[in-house]
Image (tube, rainbow, N blue to C red; front, side, top):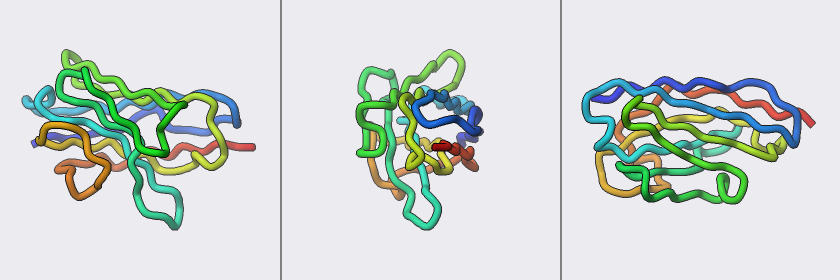
Length: 124
């Protein structure tokens, strides 16, 4: 079992930066691929980024390419998402997710555990 709690959401102006963190509990955190998804109001949840067990392989969905960076610290059981040059269209609830499989996936059904999400609002 892995429990996930997201931190760091809030209100930021367009062009600004925000860093999200996800704290995980569970002995096998280091054996899970971790990911960030987001859900814009009225839309389906979409992939932002994923990172492999050891942190050596990152992958990005269309939502995260170019401006966002995912990282993890297995010693602290955390995964982070650095978001730069934020735009109003990045406003969404951001979710942390974990899967026991090897490698990232852009599909929500591939993930076994989810946090409750944190709201990010980007003002214009």
